[in-house]
Length: 223
Ligand code: ADP
Ligand code: MG
Image 1: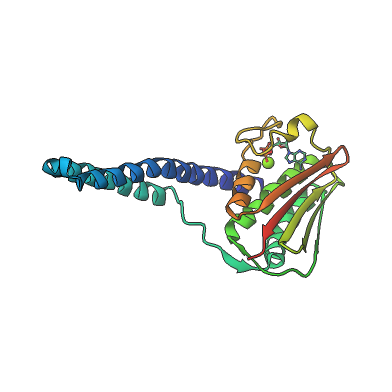
Image 2: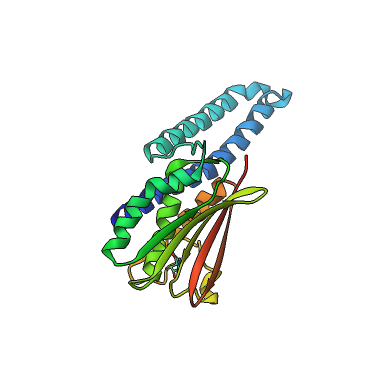
């Protein structure tokens, strides 16, 4: 599990950096292209239209390179499908349980009847893996991680709760910052990835913590 998550962390980070950089570069390209096209049609610039055509085609070329790069980096449009997340939790549970057994830790789930929401399955899987992994790392042997689902009027809720050592208040504010870690061998990427996954799903992630444990509560909006 640890190795799989580390690998997913890296893949996901590269994909996200590619996506981020790609969008950051593409936006100004699009703006400049629009202005050039507009200026090209103005009378004053009509004599130099070949310059404008050249500039526009160079921008299009840059845009094409970005598209190629994004697909090379494995970036895909994060297409979502209607899912009952209970089934996704049940699918991944055996993997989590085998990891728990190895370390003499407990994992359980409590799944209520919930409606379907639009979810990218791979991202959801990674969300659970990252949060449960943090839970395992926070508890001693004998400790528990619990996965819960339920629904509210506006959302379906996933909650991952652990009986671990908790998160000090000065650390709480830094959660989700890439590379922020309090662990000697941590990457500080797990939560950053979780936060961006939740954001892409237009969801919300809340953290509650004290010295007896921590819970991450994720709201996915109903379609
Ligand atoms: P990493 O696990 O590699 O340190 P994360 O982004 O997953 O990176 O987590 C960042 C930090 O948030 C952790 O180093 C830890 O201090 C804190 N944290 C996250 N989840 C928990 C949790 N369930 N219990 C206690 N601390 C946590
Ligand atoms: Mg982690």
